[in-house]
Image (cartoon, rainbow, N blue to C red; front, side, top):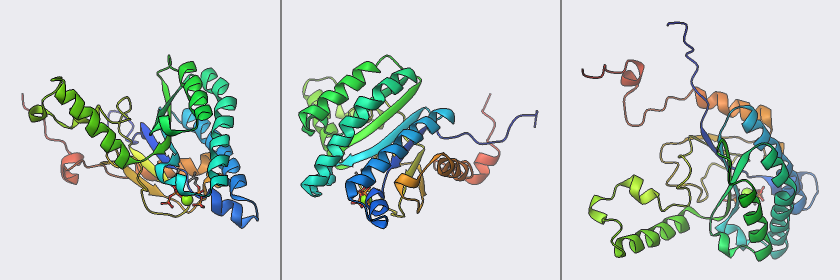
Length: 251
Ligand code: IPE
Ligand code: IPE
Ligand code: MG
């Protein structure tokens, strides 16, 4: 084996559906916003853990387009928490050289949240080693619609021809054009659905579901998810035999 390690690599990009804040709070007799507050603490710890473990891209589902349907008080608490998170964490992101991105219909967020987001994104825009993406007012279906509109405009301007368009060309119009596809999608809280998160980008992602509620998800739980990921065989349409002994490339 030439002394080479056979250990499979960690994912380059992890997406997390951070679910279970409400149930965490309910179990303790707290209000739902208190659960979100605890969830924000877990978020901070996971951003650090990803950097320690060498995960370069982390995308967090923080607020879905469907989450506007929650009670006003909860939506307000979530927006306030987002602003607080950004105002407190930007310094840390800069110190750790993490670049912040946001995906979703950002222009529909409250003005003050948009401002805080823009400030944090601008402060970190020079960095390239670590990428933290917040999915806010995000919906994969809206993303496809927005991409289709942008694509149609590019066609109308003669910049692109639909006849020769492949997925790479089209996906440049998705919100995630600057990011690689996720390798691993984690969802906490025992729900086993995707809830409109990165539908296109997760075409070949591995999925990891855990009963742990988001406020209880820490570095150890992340390690477990990564160990499970490394045990998977990602085939991308090939057979297991092909992967075990790749055909020699023709001379
Ligand atoms: C996830 O936790 C946070 C957001 C959706 C913003 P939930 O608030 O969905 O928690 P549960 O599912 O009610 O427990
Ligand atoms: C998905 O969680 C959205 C976020 C984690 C931000 P939800 O709790 O809103 O999803 P559903 O409604 O249970 O599918
Ligand atoms: Mg939920």
